Length: 309
Image (cartoon, rainbow, N blue to C red; front, side):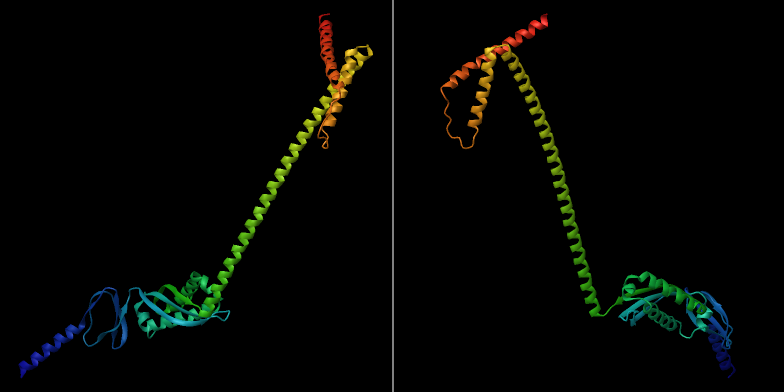
């Protein structure tokens, strides 16, 4: 009977000893309770508990954890109903607070995030909620991190995964985008046509300026040519007048022949003139042109004589 009691005692002692030894895995902290009251926290490694007095209270995961935020309907400031979901990254920094300051940590964090998503998106218009993801994430992170600080955790990131408007709003937005694209295309086309008209008008202006400049230059040169011709005719008339005054018959013949030829030229240039009949006296006029050569020869001889003198 005594041997049986010894064996029973040894078995009981071994069981108690085994239950008093704990190995805390990496990434976890164990809270230790004595008679149900928290006394300390054991970090990864070997931990010895006082038999029948101490016990493991909570096994707290100290690694960064991820919570999926389920999809929920949110009403925006402009009364648009959208479905929103997201994800939360958090890490426990203080194991006793995470164990004893909140009953179910994951559920508390999840409900807090969902509530603040409704608050943040409810203060924004639909267009803002679709285009300002970074601002939404930053506001959620700031509010939730402050609220969960007493629980001994650090919220590292909150990301909105998807914001889904109703189908009718999606169709309306698609039509709006199409109308905006068509409007921009029409504006660009009109602007291109306007620039084309401006360039064409500018080209016509430059062409008109160049044409006017050309006409001006041509008129100037034509006037200069007429002026020189008039000067030449004046000099010739003066020479002929002097010769006639001196009684030179050749000068008279030249003067008559010149006027005769100009008269025939005017008759021939008439648009109604089809046939030109020359009188018999035209041969005499041609003979009188010989006087022109003689007159020029005499003028040249006189010029040389005066030069030698």
